[in-house]
Amino acid sequence: MSNSHISAKLRQEVAEQSRYRCCYCQSQQRFIGILLTVDHIIPESLGGATIDPQTGTTVRIFHPNKQKWAEHFRWSSDGIRIIGVTPIGRATIVAMKLNRPVLLHSRRFWSEAGWHPPPE
Image (cartoon, rainbow, N blue to C red; front, side, top):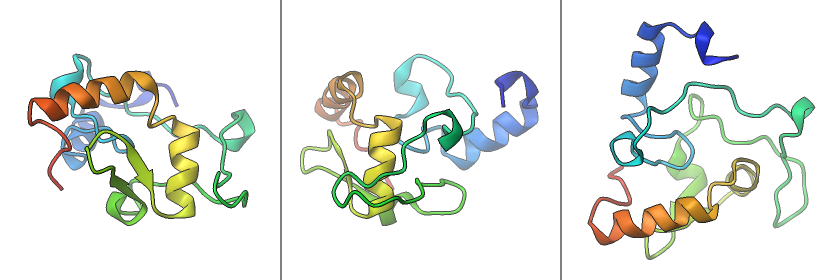
């Protein structure tokens, strides 16, 4: 679904519910310089990966409205990398590229400033 089909009211509700963070990588909107988008995850039919890289088994990826982030992910000791603690978490990290270089670079700066990781 494109953002043009999402009402301003629904966008606001989603932003408030997610505490103005990306539901996957937890980046805070106030630090990234753009408004977060409201969108669907990548479906398998369009190439979305659902393979746990550790076990090679097929799993569903994380659904932020149905699951809790802390049940599937944790932060590395330096607060820079997202670690998948379940097959769902690991597959989601790969599918959504949650540890891509630009995010790691940003998290490093945010961490040094004391802004990251975000509070639970």
